[in-house]
Length: 319
Ligand code: ADP
Image 1 (cartoon, helix red, strand yellow):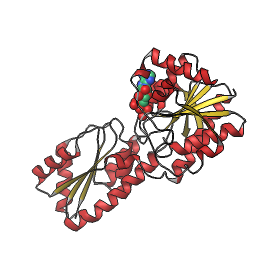
Image 2: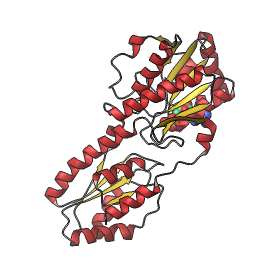
Image 3: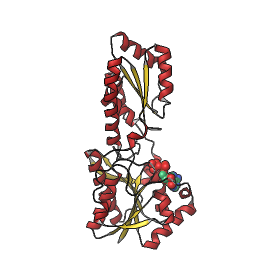
Image 4: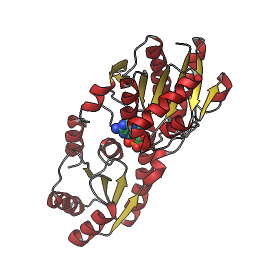
């Protein structure tokens, strides 16, 4: 392989830039030409492809977002769209592609591989919802952003003796809520993977209040329901003054943590190695601090699981 491409796709996450940098530098280190595909699969189909040099990825390791931009494209879900993309890659002579993104982006990479164009997936999403890796790039940064917000809200919650509902990202995966809830000392954590009992949530709040707690913090993953609605229900049922914060897109931004930069560097470089070894259709990850790679289709066919022991621990510590 003499020329490879790299793109970022789907929802952006802090650390994507560090991953792009690792791909570019690792490729150049091995005397491989590397091309950036701008705006994800949409830019792939329209041929927004530019050669990247060592300097093209200078000064981005610490920046959130993605210098290659990202996009969502319905057209790419069709075989015609995918073939269009392959045509563009072939025009430039690119023989392999690193795709940095979430599970939707992995589906695109799997389809390209199926059509004979080797791709390797790098897990870039704040949701930590990709099977076959303990952590995805951006999760740690998002988590720390949430913790920072919880700590600040805790100060004001204590001063005013209020109950706070904090809605965090996670439509299908509760990892941000679970980890942030545990690290932030939340009383209750509601995640999409586990059914909840509203009476139990209310009882817990009342018990805490009766034993003199100055504040309560409830973390709700967006996939469970609207934080605003929870806040209303709680205030009505407990008569405790309740406020709601929906953290929203601040969770996607910011300078990546050291953990995410290191993870992105390791995974990005490994993806290039796999392409050079002629192994397309793989997804890289980290398990027990070892770099691993799995068949991308197997990754896509596995359900996302939360760490049940951690969920139980969060319950035990918030009695
Ligand atoms: P993420 O990668 O963050 O999960 P999306 O689910 O939006 O984000 O996926 C990003 C892009 O990947 C989509 O806009 C689409 O272009 C492509 N994609 C998603 N699903 C498929 C599919 N089944 N086949 C081909 N491409 C897909």
